[in-house]
Amino acid sequence: MVMMNEIDGIRKSAILLISLGSEAAAKIMKTLPDSYIQKVSYEIANIDYVRPEERDAIMNEFIEMSRAKEYMVNGGIDYAKKLLNMSIGPQRAKEVTDMLNQIQLRERPFNIARKADPQQLTNLLLNEQPQTVALILCYMQPDKAALILYQFPLHLQSEIAERIGTITSTSPAIIEKIEKVIENKFSNYIENEMETVGGVKTLVEILNSVGRSTEKNIIRVLEEKQPELAEEVKASLFTFEDITTLERGDVQKVLREIDNDDLALALKGGSDDIKEFIFANLSERASETLKEDLQFMGPSRLSAVEEAQQRVVSVIRVLDEKGEVYLRRGEQDAIIS
Image (cartoon, rainbow, N blue to C red; front, side, top):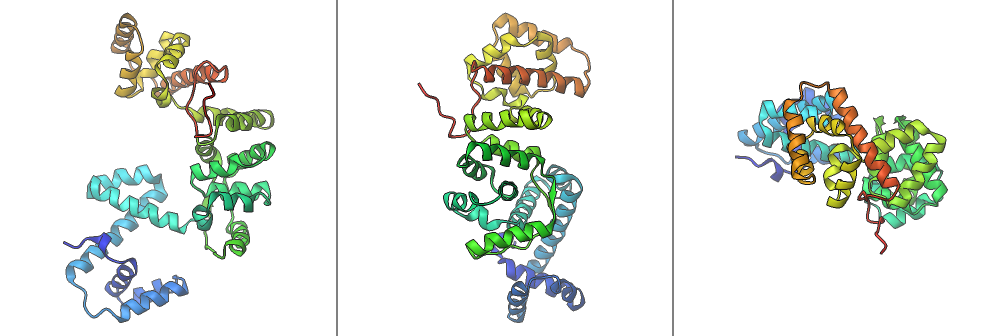
């Protein structure tokens, strides 16, 4: 059996083009960068024979990858995994989506920024406009973006965070212009294509990795400048599923503040792990009562369950702001005794 991870990427491309025939191969070659065309052409010239099983394996991988990419474009990664699981099985589906994610990561703009030393990149970005910094951070690993954001002055942290949270998409022309600035300083250039970046999800990922003081300062300024964005970010920073990360004493403080009906309705849509976690933090009598409420509760609308879960989260956020419970954050969020 041919192990696909043992076949070099250039050789795969060469075998695929040979297998597709000269007409189709010529059309594909026209779309490739010159540097890649040279490498593939050299490999094609040096291939004398291709084993049928190797050719078939590469063709199958190409078909699977094309199908996976189409699924991801139409419905996202979870949708792609679901359909691939049904067609080629969970193990192969994971392998295909992992490969596709790696390819997309290599194709993403600002690859040099993701590879650069955080301090070196911070020194570079400190002299850039907030909108430029925000765009670059959108393309970076959340933990690395958090390290960089943390080193900016407080007023700039908030401005950059606001811009990250409100970015929807950026044109290739703007990305290319910014990339050229980075290229001049890091001697590297990455071609790009239009891509949706930023938004609340990206901002939340970054804020989940910064220290609590940094997060609170950013949220405070967002509340003043864009209240709706601030509320959306705060709601996403801590989810109902995250309740299992609380310490036992903090959970019990939270449970004392939550309406029993809200708790039961919220748990109706929760996993078994969350239910067991809550039961373990209640008295035996309260736990049995809650189990009975869940057992005899009729069908509930998903929106009602989600609203109840959000009310639970709101209680946790209020207690956190008062300093009565502790929500875990990035490494900068140290506890001072």
